[in-house]
Length: 273
Ligand SMILES: NC(=O)C1=CN([C@@H]2O[C@H](COP(=O)(O)OP(=O)(O)OC[C@H]3O[C@@H](n4cnc5c(N)ncnc54)[C@H](O)[C@@H]3O)[C@@H](O)[C@H]2O)C=CC1
Ligand SMILES: O=C(O)[C@@H]1CCC=N1
Image 1 (cartoon, rainbow, N blue to C red):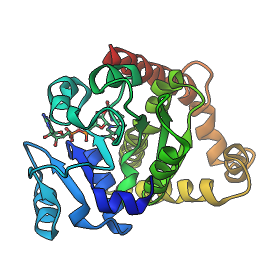
Image 2 (spheres, rainbow, N blue to C red):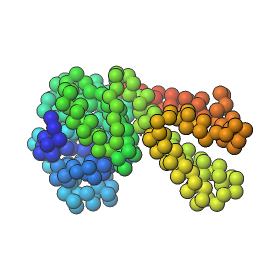
Image 3 (tube, protein in one colour):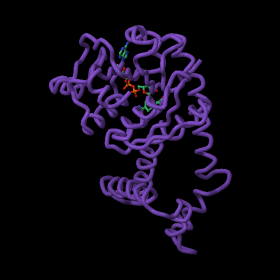
Image 4 (cartoon, rainbow, N blue to C red):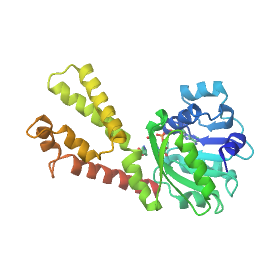
């Protein structure tokens, strides 16, 4: 299956809220024709309605034999939503789920054993082409399916193939939910600046640019993040004073994030039940 097949046969999105829209926005910016996209969503956003004006089929009759169906509803609503596309199960159509927790076995049970299904977890920086998606396929998924999924995902960022489905809840907790932790870091850093007397707008500008700039440097630099941290830290200077607080073995960042990521991983497992 190739990109040309996708353009010709069509891509169906079951649900197109925050994450589905972030992906669709990236794909359309990358050249996916509006006329190749079918979206089912009972509560379309203004953005989605405007894409319908560009030619996206919104709550329209489905194409006869879509190349891909993307499952992008909340895990809790999957059971009710899935019957709308179940008839495409059985072989010819590749299903890609982005739902947290929902397992390959869950989908195979509802779409039929012969159905190629990829379970994936993207993240919202996909909207600006800077996402990362973890993915793994069931036994029906061929190398050509995975390559097509990766080609599609490459227009919204990077991707990683998992070794085993059991890694997916941890991937969800690190990169799927991760942008929210980083946005909260920006909020908290700005609030801390305000507490030291900075005007709110200036504190937010400093915090946002610092996190974005550090992220960009971490991606571009040949040094690892630990060395980049050392590069900022003058002995006996200001950074060392802050890191003494942040790197405390009991109350610092590392044990806090370990607990947060464990909570997210556990919740992913619960959503899968
Ligand atoms: N938001 C994020 O950062 C990420 C979300 N995900 C996964 O993506 C999925 C969607 O999450 P969000 O986009 O955040 O949620 P959302 O609530 O923004 O979007 C879900 C969409 O599904 C629609 N919907 C509800 N019932 C439907 C039905 N029966 N048929 C068709 N559409 C229906 C809703 O109207 C809504 O627009 C979830 O399964 C979540 O686990 C995965 C990775 C990251
Ligand atoms: O919060 C959630 O459950 C979804 C999955 C990863 C990001 N958002």
